[in-house]
Structures are given as C-alpha cells and as structure tokens.
Figure (tube, rainbow, N blue to C red):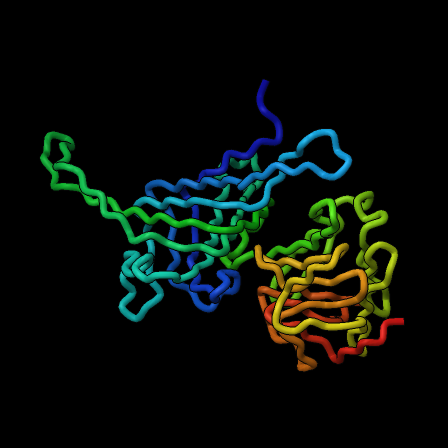
Length: 321
C-alpha cells in the first residue's frame, strides 16, 4: 500500500542563509552568506535530560532541560556578502565567540506533494574553523584527475524553530518563536507558544486544560490581563502597563509561582504572582522593530507593549487594581 501524507524532502537541494547575530545569538544584525545545493547536509539534535521527583510523587520523571544541535555542510556553494563576492566561506569560524543565525529551507520536488516545504531557523549558532579535506587523484572515464579538496563547515546551535507547509516557498528570513513558562515549587511547565516576526506575533495556549489554576493571558478589546494563581499580576491597556513593582537590569525573579517569557531560546522577563515584573530595562518610547521581542496586542490588533532587550510601553504604573 502506498504511503499517504508523506513528503520526500530533498534536503540536499536546500537553500540557506547565515546571519551575523547579536551577543545573545538571537537577533540578526547582517547577512554573511547565501548558498544552496551543497554536496551534503547533516542536521542532528539532542536534548539534555535530568531526573525530577516532585514532592508526593511515587516515581521519578525524565525532563528535557536543554537542547543542542549540530550542523555539517559539505562543499557549500556559497557567496559571501562582501564587495569581493568571494564564492567560498572564507573567514566563517575563524573568529572566537562570534554568533550567527542559520536558516535552512528545503522542499519536495514530487508533484504529488504540492510543493511541500520545510524551514528551520537555528539560533545561538557558533562555527568551528572550516575544515579542508583532501583526497587522492581520481580516475574518471579513463582519465586521471587531480586531487579533490572538500570544504566542510561545522556549526552548533542552542535553539531551533521549525515550520512547514506547502505552496509558496518561504523566504530565508529567520522565523522567531517564544514561549511562556509557568514556574512553581514543583517545576516548570510551558503554557503558551509564541510565533511571529519583527512586526507581529501571536500567543497560543499549548493546552487550555493546563491553564486552569495556574496562569492565563486574557486578550480583550481594550487590553490584556495576566493572571497567576487567580491573582491579577499585570494589566496592559492603550495607556500603559500596570504592575505592583518592577525589577530593572535582570530577567529573573525567584518568587513562585511566576511566569517566564522566552524568545528564541532567551529569557526576556519574569512576572510574579505579586505583580513584580523583571526585565533588562523599561522605556516609554515607541517600541522599535525587534526580532527578539514578544509583542503583546489586544484583540483589535493594537500594540500594548513589547518584551525584549527592554520592555517598551506607553507608560508604567505600580497601581494594580
């Protein structure tokens, strides 16, 4: 019986883009190269695991606590975005502690798959020095050829965002993702996913059942209320953000229960049940385009505040009702 609903993704025909990133490895600040059709691509991922045993539980539970990805590209056909337009990788991997974002898009060429495609955006990417691998002279059609040099690029990443679809092939711009995590004395649980770009984004509950008794993001026509354990912890309207207290210069708050807001694998802020918001900074200026920020809008599409490198809102008040 022929398989149904399967797409044959030809990853060896992938297109890809490598971007210089900020210090956190999550925000693109310029393209390094574009390329496609390498001899080989290998994508491998793994999760770090730990054993947890919650109070009152009769057994241990294995939880994923981190992720790691390894990418190998052999003989990439790449063009560096430099005046010289050198068609090789050049200095990729030659600098310590340089961060990148890698985007890979590939698609099926099977007409029955309706142009199915797959896209990955890797964040926190670092590169090893480019490997040059030579082989002896080759024999082809009775003719002796010269030695063959293979160029191999090894990359590692801390976080990946994956999307797929069919029809129009997506661009090589990074896809941004985030999540809202609930933290209490028993551990951490993801309650919401976030997907978007510099201009827009949307929160989606992982499972509405998980929200009960924990926390909710209630988006209305006039604003958004964030409730933790039945207590209003933050209210945002077109006039600004209302909380009870703010912690400037860090994204961590140690009180539980709390919510943590993550984007592209980086925590951008925390909110406690008592109404304390922790962020790297607070500004009442207009929110800039920021691909590393979570964007909170009401149901009418009006931007209320963003939470990224800083928290931007029209105003801040410590007078929750």
